Structures are given as structure tokens and as C-alpha cells.
Image: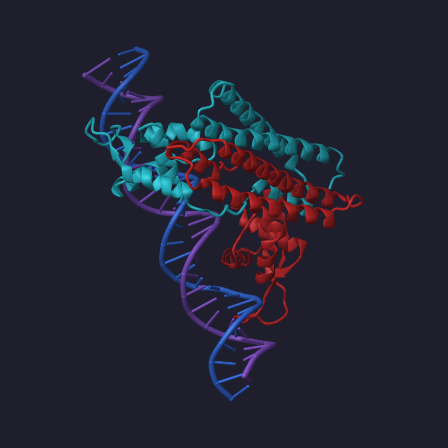
Length: 181
Length: 181
DNA sequence: ACGGATTATGCAACTAGTTGCACAAGGACT
DNA sequence: AGTCCTTGTGCAACTAGTTGCATAATCCGT
């Protein structure tokens, strides 16, 4: 149940329309909480119905016309409550690890190419994060909010670093592995 | 669509009943692909209906009586196909990172305690993985399947190491952070 | 041998997320 | 002026995963 809170956070950072939110979910926020535009529109409707956000009074909201939303006090309160509330970590799910485990039983044929592809994707993502770090967090910038946001970005960087390293190791392992069954 | 393949892998490693599978998903396989017993029973029924697995002919399968399943050739083939097929990485979703980002907007009040709790959980998980490594992968053991399984375990260890380190950093950051809004 | 806990199997309803499509408005090409 | 492409908004159906409960068999102490 985190999508509404992701949206509240995004809207507090800056009031936006559904499409703008979708764009922003493709970049920054989506790096650790992805969402499609349909999810976002549906959730915006719910949040508005629940009195957490409202449309900025501007153009009349006809179909096919952009509506901008802003967070109401109730929305901010709900976000604060949710942020502070204790939550259990979600159980892990990682397809790639599962496939490797399966490969130990049915053989590694065909897997290597996809590992290479993933390695490339993670390398690209890592480069993107590092670019963002250079751009948004130069040495001097460390107001409290910036430090928190930087911390989040560091998590992204370190995770991508881990994956590139791990995938490299895995491919190396494949190199000197005899063909399985 | 990975649960059926997780089950096929588990059943190839050893034929089992629904409950045994559930147990095994709580340990090894569940570390990177968790599933509840209801998911497992439902999926076993589907796999059987699809001709991928069959019940081991033993006790008659009355309700409340254990049925053991084994993988049929079609199941093994499907698993091999799936393992080799190219798959895009799932979009990320991490609640904790999202909450930290929200905290940058609505304040960090109450968050610290939960970070400590998560740190403790990750420390415990890390210790468990390291124990498994000591037990199951002593220096000499490196048949091809073992090396693959060890690689998967290393991913788990490194990920938990990352999280414990990152959470420690985050808590340190909290320490010398002035109270936000 | 009986009543209560535990083990094992399963159905049904719900929630979250995804996919596919529809449609309106506005610019752009001709 | 018409059609075509892109942008922005949205509904509906589907899929995967979760929660809550039901039921049968077995084990265990008295």
C-alpha cells in the first residue's frame, strides 16, 4: 500500500498533473517505486475522493484536459503517519537468482547471453545515478533534506554497483564452467 | 510468472508434498522467491493439470493426506526453456527508500526506531547466510552445481552486507541531523 | 477413548499491479 | 479543410500475490 504515499511525496515536492507525475515516476521516484500512468490516475482519483489531495482550481477539468493536484493537510498528515509507522520488509523476489538456481539443475544453456544483457543494463543505470549525484549533490550541498535524498541515491548507487560486480563474477564463473547436462 | 518455475526447481531438487515445499520455501528457495502455502497448493494443482508434474503413486490422495509430486519430462523442458529465455529485470520497489524520501518532506520523526529494527533483521539474515555458507560450501566443494548455488548465496550475503552497512550509515546521519519540520 | 493441539490440505475473497484499449484535444503536414 | 500523429486522460479486464477461513487427519496427554 505504498503507491498513494509515493504520490503524496511527489505532489508535496511539487504539485503536478497525472502526466507530469508519470514523467517523474519514470525518473527520480520511479527508481525505487515504479508505477504506470494507469496506476497513477486511478490512485489520484482515490486520493481526491478521500480528501487527501485536491485539483488546483485552474482550467475546468474536461476529459483530455490536464488537471493539477496539490496535497491537502489531511494528505500531509497521512504521509507523516505512514512514514513513521513500523513496517516489515517485503519478502524477497529475484527472478535472476531463481534462474541461476534452476540452471544448477537443468543446465546453463542460453543463460549467459541474458546475464550479459543484465550486466549492461545495470552498468547503464549506475552511470545514470552517478551522473545525478554529480549534478544534484555537489560537495557543498548538505541541507538536511538534501542529506536524506543523497542517502537514498547512495543506496541506488551501491545496489547497482553490487549487481554489476556480481554479474561480472557470475559470467567469469560461467567462463570456466564445464557444460552442464 | 516465476512461481511455477520456482516450484519445478524445488521438485527437481527433491520430490515433495505441498507442505514440504512450503517448508523449503521458508528456508533456501524462499530467500529469493517467497511463497505462502496457498500459492504453492494452487500452483501445484495447475502444474499437475498442465501435465508438468504428477503425484507420486503411493498413498491414495484423500483430503488432509499428503500427496508427493515429481516433475515430468514436460516440466523439466519448460523449466529449461524459461531459464534460458531472456527476461527484463522487474522495476524496483523499495518501501524503506520511499519512506526516507518522504521523510525529507514531512520530517524524520519516528523513523529512526524502525531503521534500527530493520538493521537488526538484516544482521540476523546475514548471520544466517554466513552460517549456511560455512555449512554447505566448505573450500573443497566445487562441483559445477555447487558453484552456481554458491554464487546465488554470495548474492544474498553481499546484499545483506550492503543493507546493514547502508542502514548504519543512515542511522549515523540521523544522529547528527537537526530535527526536521 | 476422548478432547484439544498440531499438521496438512484447500477454497474464496480481496488487494495491488499490469495490459490493452478508447477517446479527446491540439499541432502539423499537404 | 482534412487526415494523421502525438499528448494527456481514463476505463475495464486480467494476473499475481495475500489474507482469512474451513476441514480432515494425526498425535498426545489424561
